[in-house]
Length: 519
Image (tube, rainbow, N blue to C red):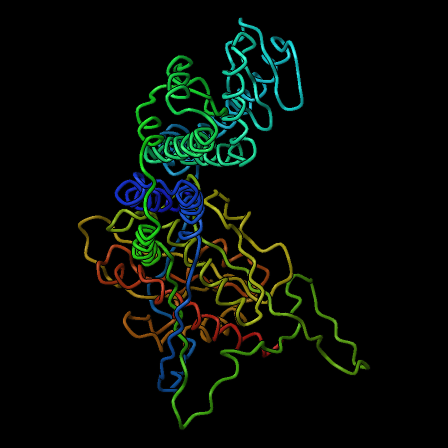
């Protein structure tokens, strides 16, 4: 989720800026400080975006539990989600509200920055009285003067000759060292992280460092007392964050740094203290993805299906009939396996909530995305009915394209204060489907693989359910309940990504075995 990512970025900026203030801000190595401020700003965005995969190989006994096609006695009936007006409208999706609010403010801040840049150009055209290369003289009425903007240096025409030269020398440093690029970058970041107060202190630190650099170069060719006096005479409040102004309040730090003795070169070793801070941020905010690779123990030949792309034969379930040419050399055409996976509920249909407040719709979506990742490793194409938090009617979820099989993913729940009858995994089919025999083969095969799961109970028989998705699907269809989220032990199990990946691979084992059989 983008908001979680931005919070991690903000945490990185906090740690890096705290290190800057404690260790580097008072040093006179202004070029190194500039590199630090820009590099750490970029790394604050990079570190939370990195994902490291940890592969763990686990040896498991190869004993597949055969699954007979049997049904439990209890059945299920469902109804399509109905938008009942006020009841649904009063249920706000706070994730979307936060996202829309964030994006609105971001768009406003970016627009304001562009507007200010355009306004500066308009002011320059209005008040410019002379232009010599990059230097522009403006009249006394101009409210923007004695500053640099991009590659332009704007000077008050009423200044004395010596004063003009000092201002031009100062602003030339900003232009030559491309300080405008730094300002554009940090202003864009400030718009992205507008909710993070640290970014405004960071922007000020970059701005101050620019002035320290320009003051140091100017003081080499000017008397420090004369230069400091000119800074005080031309001082004005901060006008615009897009410009490098010659003299703006406050000036205390600039004058102190100008008179401060340069630090000795060995003091540059203090920059090595940043390495532990960088390592802490990497360990805390780099994403970890644990991948469990199960290898069957000796005595049984390892299944190549677990890692190799299976040979799958076309199953034209969407056609009214299947015609096979008896004179053809091959009865079936080998095709790439296609699995349609549905994340139940979504959007305004949030379904039930888990003990920890998570919505079933979000747990379903997380599970199908993990299943899709694992399928791609095997060369299995997965089509998701929804990949975001959106509402789809049941009929819109039905597969419209040819595919090998259709699986709908859900999580079970129990009414508040009621005992949880069964907390584990369940597999459903519908006996009302005209293709029930094939669906039974798919369901029984996947259920057989799921029985190898450790840590959570698995129902030992198929369940019959009068569900629209199962009843009217034109391709073999099953529905899998990945556990009861009203049960604390089950919820703890499925909250671990490695367990969802293990379940996903068992489902895919069953799907591969089913798909290799052909029609």
